[in-house]
Length: 263
Image (tube, rainbow, N blue to C red; front, side, top):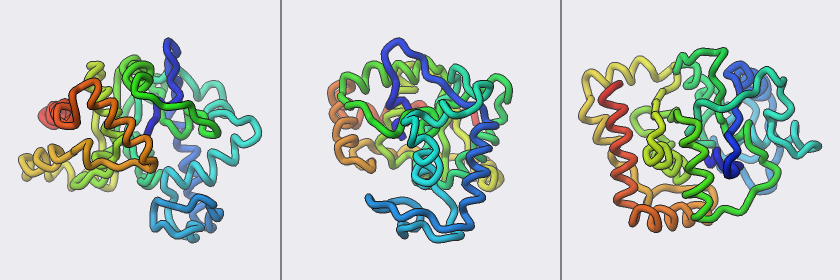
């Protein structure tokens, strides 16, 4: 993800209510019936067909290209800046999610968390960050303002899908956000989309050791990012601050095991 990518020192992250995310999901469901636009840089999510064919569900990356960027093109602002003021507030849940997942499934996962609607504001990068420009990323910034922004939010919610082979645990940004969560002592919550809830809960009872083993296979060295430069900077930061990928893996796995023990 990279959802704290607009974090500035001393400035708390803002978030959106679930109702605002549902409204974007409704737009994504409506757009599914028509083909997406041709993307000059290519389409790297979903079926990777460019343009997205009619009938194919929009990934989060598709929502960025087809909904968020066009809606904010004139003002060059974050999507939340064109949302109703009542939908915006100080973020108290930081969402860790891969952009190549179905946006509908991602919102479904947040719904499954069953958090109080009136008082929960999600820091959800594609809607709460300015996407028309990007600040320069450095190890000092990643380990400073970025990490502290996640710590200040105080709670992170990991979107785990598919539950038996989670995409997020193969993504450099998601692993970095999980590491930031662990090293700032923020709380970690994990949820799966509604359609996966029943088999996941059944597996927790019958295959607990197997699930724990799968979650333990995450590896910063093998994780991917859409930008090789981002991946290299995250690895550089991990090496500088923790001594390398192995101790970083241990910290993240420890946090995942703690959650699993309480699931």
